[in-house]
Image: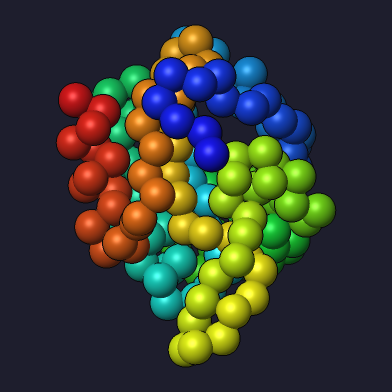
Length: 151
């Protein structure tokens, strides 16, 4: 599992905008890289809307917000339009980035065990090192928790 001080794995993924995005593109800024299970589900929608509502305060801390899931670009575009999301959503269909960040794994829900994306967030500093790992995320409180850690 990645921890504070580790170099954040770089990646190239397709964004909802249709362009290829690399973590390296954001050097000089902090990156709030959050992984979520699925577009248009209750917890993921709550978390995304909270980031949307707190985006300007996060930008004021020299940070950008990037959401990652295995959903398609079309799904991301629909999700963004439906909830007026104002930050990048990246598609990781083969799960390589999810695996690199340790967010793909066994989950339990209603007594059933399955593989999926664990809701986790990484704050990455201006040089590409991990500043903070949030392994237990509560969707409704998370954006404010991230904002507090950004200083």
